[in-house]
Amino acid sequence: MAAPRSKEADLIDEPGQLDWVSLETTQRLLAERGVRPDTAGAYLIDALLDAVRAQGWEPIVEGGPGDWQVDLQEWQEGTPVRHPASSGADLAATLRSALWEAMSLATRTKARVMFDASAREMFGISGQEFLRRYDAGELDEEDPSVIHLAMGRDFGR
Image 1 (cartoon, rainbow, N blue to C red):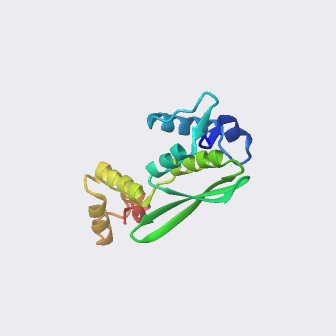
Image 2: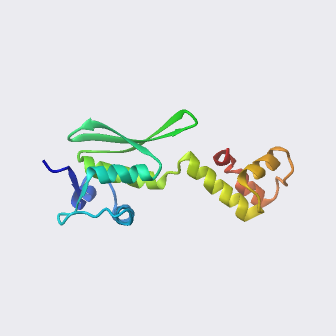
Image 3: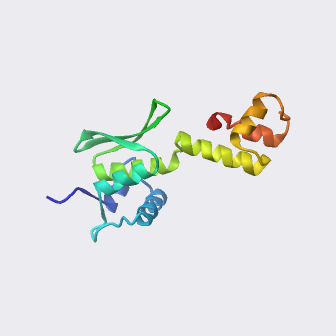
């Protein structure tokens, strides 16, 4: 028996699924990973699961034919973080929508990397050094750049 596949039409026609922009974005990501649809426009379920995992999330698939739910789970520092990502009648279409969510959400690790990059770009110091100086009151809290980065300090911790 052939592995289940997703067709492009299933992704657009099902309410709550992908729009054309997110569909094209996920298609590009899959192509970059060497995943291509077959001549009918279908993707292998395992390829979709692997693509979600490559974004730093573990897809949690629940339900059954006609009523699928996919959540995204990240394990960081022993604490499970689970985000509802997508639901729908077709598993592959639901996974494709979950892939879009996985691409859109930052894991805690990605958030720390982005915070650190911003601190380095704006102040020439690491994110951790920015937090240390901010917490110690060593930075001008009225400086717009400090305010801007300080708003995202929870991402750096």
